[in-house]
Length: 424
Image 1: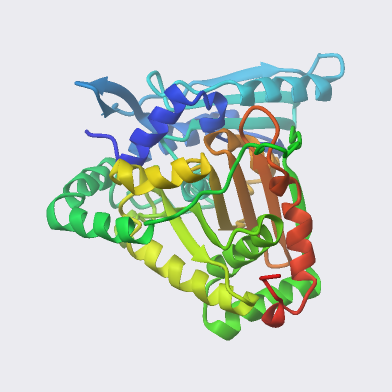
Image 2 (image 1 turned 120 degrees about the vertical axis):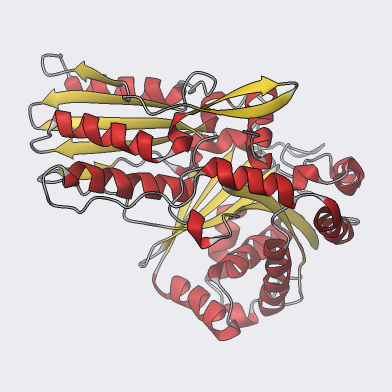
């Protein structure tokens, strides 16, 4: 089957931009309690049989990326026994870090599963997947399905119904949809929207000393500041994404003076409800272009319009646009359309609810897969707070605006947002 448009872009990133392990999507759980190893193996096998994307490899055929869907087969679970090791926790940390730094070869198999045993009732499970096979929402589906498949073997969960549609069905439909008049309409919209656009710099400019960013940086927005942000969304009848983007745009304007900003954001393009329980790579990178307003409220309104337009035309990823569409922006600012990506994602209960086990997802940090982009800003919304993480995925220092971004956001959110001035 043909690969999807998004998969082809990831393939190019993997091979020509040196993202390496940055294109893996690992799920790591600490399992405390009486683990039934046979039930876990059986659950992994059923999970792979259930979702074609977890048993699909990739190859070039006549210079086009192709999905090769394999028949179900047992998942190889490598077990590492650390029960007799000296300093087992230190050894575990080193081995997990080594595993996460290794790429997953999608031409061989899209996932790798390892289980470390520290005691009879203490294990750590890592399911390491290539990004070609999964996205953020797919990881949630995998977590929920593995829980139910494991527990069904003890009679504590009902059997799962079959998946309604598989990923290859969707990618074939995408290929048919991006043709003819539909493609011309999408191309026309983006060509007009991006005319004269400029991209943010991701490397220090002349006279800018830049800053080293070896680790992700985070800010936690809670209490009155979070309530203020949610009130803005509620008052204007908007989802949180355009409001969060307005915070980013207003903060960057204060740091750089730029009033016309274009950045990327990843959106889910599953579309039809029959793909709601399908594992696969359904993300498209679309561009949002906003002119900063005189007030924060005005910037929010403009972000709402820009996001609505981007979502309505999200079926066409930016890299399918004619080169001239984004070429002028590259020439003006020296950047690429995918250099700066801002995402708002909803937190979800990522625990494996395995029978008689305390199974806790291990935090890996937002920066694990930052190699795909120059600057990535992830805003993860919990009921009690908003965690904002900033990573710089390129070698060398980041421009000074990246260093000042989190303080600028916190300063902006400390003000009454409905009256917060954006322009000096």
